[in-house]
Every structure is written in structure tokens, then in C-alpha cells.
Amino acid sequence: MRQALEKRFSFLYSGELSAVVMFIFVSIMVNRAYPELHLYSLLSFWASFLLLEFLLIQGSFYWYSKWRRLKREKISVTPMNVVQLLWKLKKWNIGLISLTSVAFVADFMRWSPTLPIGGLSLSCFIYIFAILEYINYFHIQLSYDNRSDIEYLRKTKRLKKSSLNRDFMHLKK
Image (tube, rainbow, N blue to C red; front, side, top):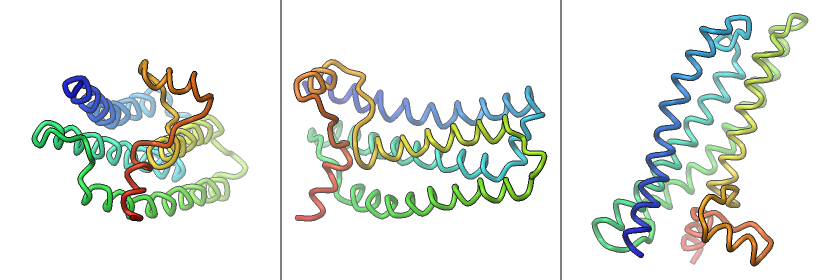
């Protein structure tokens, strides 16, 4: 059981970290292949992209800390200092999500009437993806990719609280 959990935590933290690196390369390739999108000229792209990367790093850090503790101390309880840090970052994330919406307004004002619709659409997609990642980490689990999660969903017919959200409950005690 413990080895399976170690493997799961390792998969989660390395997957999130891989996504951080991969998205950097993908953004470079898309910007070079489609210069008409004006991606790197859009404030909304940079705000959305950096928000997403910041959230993925937080997710990777969370799963890494759980993996490391399980490996070293043989317990899967998240270290309290990690939970406290992520609780503080939760508030920062809300602020960054709000500021990112302002970046879209700024782009509309700057680029009007020649809006690069393709670039804005891609930026909007990244922004929505970042918000979904935030919800998945800090509120409700949106990703159901293993047998036990799918079984839970099938039996209860409702979404789970995220693992981090359950950890936050320990702060309030």
C-alpha cells in the first residue's frame, strides 16, 4: 500500500513539474510558428501563462512534500509548514487570478480595433485552464485518473474535496 502511494505521489509531482517545463517549450514553439498570434506581445498571455506555471509549481511542491515525507518518515500526512505556506499562497492565487482578468482588459484597450483574436483566444484558454488547476488543487478534485477515484465518483455521484483542501481543515483545529 505504501509503495503504491509513494509511486502515486511521485507520478503527481513529477507530472506537474514536467508540465511546467513542457509548457515553456510549447509556448516558444507556438510563438515562433504562429507570429500572427502576437502571443509574446499580449499582457493577457503572460499573465495567464505565469499564473498557470505558478499554480503547477505549487502543485508539484505539494505532491513532492507528501512523497518526501512518506519516503522518509513513512507517513503520508502533509507537513504542517507546507499546508500553512499553501494556505497563504491560496490568497495570492486569488489576487493573481483577478489581476489576470485586468490584463485582458488592458489588451483589449491596447489592441483595439486590431485585436489578435487567435492570441487572445489562446490566452483565454490558458487562463481558464489555470483557474481549473486552482480549483483542482485548492477546492474540489477535478481530475479522476485512477481506479479508486473513479470508484468513489461512481458510488457517491459527487466530486471529492481536493487533497489540499482536506489538509486545510487541519489548520482550523
